[in-house]
Length: 478
Image 1 (cartoon, rainbow, N blue to C red):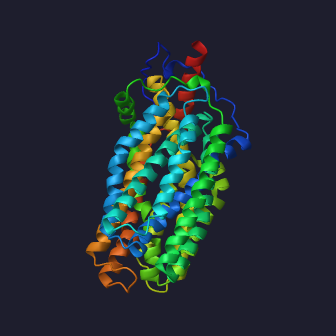
Image 2: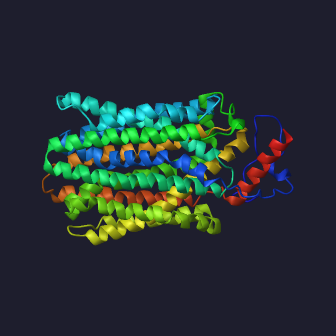
Image 3: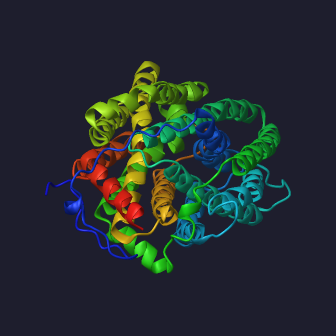
């Protein structure tokens, strides 16, 4: 048996033949979903992409430069919220897997997420002016905790539903590729919002507060409508209901026992430790190193546009060379792009633009292929256990993603404060060096380590075809 071939199964629901007993695991006909279904599924990501980017790009700066909260305080808030995720993410995944409802096991959670997402997002950008420093800190802590918890309620069931829409190996790349486009389109719209906030900040603190509050309320309502529409219009596979793990600890034990999932958890964590810097520090680098704060949206646009434009190219390329090779190449290109950021200096507008463009090209490949591979790994779990627990898997990946992002936020807050960062003034050489290390050297190392791990991934298309053949044989024999 080759390295990519699955191990002998241990199904929990009755006896079934092993993969070696399948005489001719014929490749099923490719399943192509209607574009309308995929677009309906992806619509909420436009609003969520807007929210996540603006929180990642501007909330730290809004808190330190407008609300005058210490960087270490905000870093601590983000770090502690990740500890809470250790509870909220697994709970959301397990309950989503176990939900029994006439509309499905994912859609009720997606629908319920509308209100808390909107309310928490509005809180982040609308703190009352009368609050004391302590009161303001508590308000922002509640907003941060609430926002990420509400997003968990939406993202875990939504990603799980995407994996359940089809079992076709390459059609999943199409689904998550379009989802990546929707998320990134929302992120591009967030750049316009950030531009408004930057201009308002240049006028006065009062103008910045007013603009942030109005924008937060509008985006909260807009996203709630998109989430509600998708929850009402989408449909789920009824045969998956009741097939989640009975016990939560057993569910996550299975995630950890899955060797492919373990490797992807490590890659997700390491990749997002480095990748978070582009959202957190681009404004700081643009203003305090390159000296062109007003061009920060342009630099981010250079990253996001190719991330979207090249998605239609990655799907046929992945068919030709395989998902793993494409993702591996994307990680290496991203590492090189971030590594170049270490050498940025004042006036390097062209250099940061080119490096952002190449990083964006790679990001589109990763955003398309990584979740598609994750969905394949979940099918390996069904092959091993006879259960369908997408919620447990995506909650694990979501927790690792947010934890890595939170660690980078916390690290950024402490490093900036310890290096002597002072808002709205010329920074010392020590602060500039710290920014270059956080923005260039740190992600360079992270993405190279991620690429090394991906090179060890063994669940390729041939192994997946055998898994689907065995699962089909079980279904036909049941």
